[in-house]
Amino acid sequence: MGRPEEIASNLAEVEERLRAACDAADRSRDELTLVAVTKTFPASDIALLADLGVRDIGENRDQEAAPKVRDLDDPRITWHFVGQLQSNKCRSVARYASLVHSVDRERLVGALGKAAVQAERTIGCLVEVRLGEGAERGGVARAEVRALADHIADTNGLRLQGVMGVAPLGGDAARAFAALRDVADRVRSSHPEATVISAGMSGDLEEAVMWGATHVRIGTALLGFRPPRG
Ligand SMILES: *Cc1c(COP(=O)(O)O)cnc(C)c1O
Image (cartoon, rainbow, N blue to C red; front, side):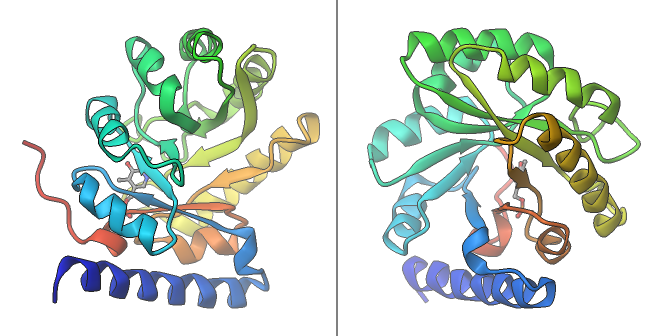
């Protein structure tokens, strides 16, 4: 099987899982955006996904994403930034990203806002919420979400769109996503426009859909196992 057939077949399986998860949660597939996380995979895979109709593409490192964006130069694609973002990368990321899923500290807000204004773009932002006990998975503590959300909403060039979370490795994904849903509801009570819940990866998309995810971020199930980073 060639790469186009492999990706098409993986996509069909992912769509089947999404449909089943939506049925189980009594939700509609239209409420969900599938973000293909293409880190470590070549731009040619992104082109194949775009041809198959998957036009929301997520990357987690600017060093890798920026050249792919440039090489593809494909206006059909909406770029998502899902990884740890360094302040010194904001200028680059602001040129292509439409939604940054991983805003996790105050300092980043100023840098990203300034970069967005310079690029004459508006960047959507999600507050990344820490769902595990350890610090290893990133995100802000639940008690700090409100302040960070307010700060984003008050910053020129940025638009607060919701929250994002990664379930802790080996933990109870449903419990983590239930907690995220709770945080999302509280953010939305003061910022009605913040409707996005980015949750669910290849291993736990069903739980995420059950708990109200609007965006799932799928890598492995679409593209296969990632080669180790060089
Ligand atoms: C890599 C990555 C994903 C995709 O994970 P898979 O388990 O391969 O589906 C989702 N979200 C973030 C933040 C990632 O870095």
